[in-house]
Image (cartoon, rainbow, N blue to C red; front, side, top):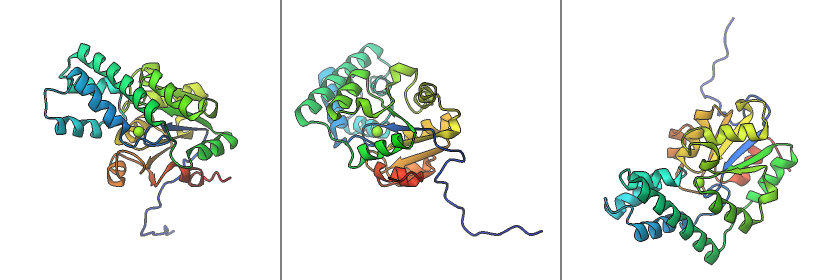
Length: 241
Ligand SMILES: [Mg+2]
């Protein structure tokens, strides 16, 4: 008996079991960022001196590489482990971010609302995750009018650890009562999002190119598929309008 020989490895683009839950990042994945996060970081750094141990370009590079992680964790690193200063900086960041979105408004990634509606209409649970504190997260949801659009929205403080730990994804599984981690799809714009999905054992991990990191970085972090933006997700999963 001979085995069929193929020269190409098929690209995995669907989990092996029906999708029950999609866990999506917010800034850069479903919500437009346009540098707001970086500017809020800069304001917080200026206000608190949290990054004064290193040249600003170095601090900004760290902020970019760790995009998607819990903000308190990022500030703790920048401050050299000065927890009190990291707490102050996180509060300053959250204030700056709230001010910036109050000044400039908050916009969804084009097609994001329709994609989430398609998933829900197909009986799939939708949970949003973020590295922001709950006050910032909720200000974004209210700005978009999205509270009723999703089953839950989770911040690191709600669950334990932020990304790249698996906690946000695993908490979403528990909240949604999905029957297995294999039925979960994780979607994000950063290597930390991808790593959290892999660490949680998600059935499919998808990168998007509307945020912080590029295709090569997302693939190297373990993404099964990389799509241009979240509007392509329902079709990738075989869920069409
Ligand atoms: Mg993001």
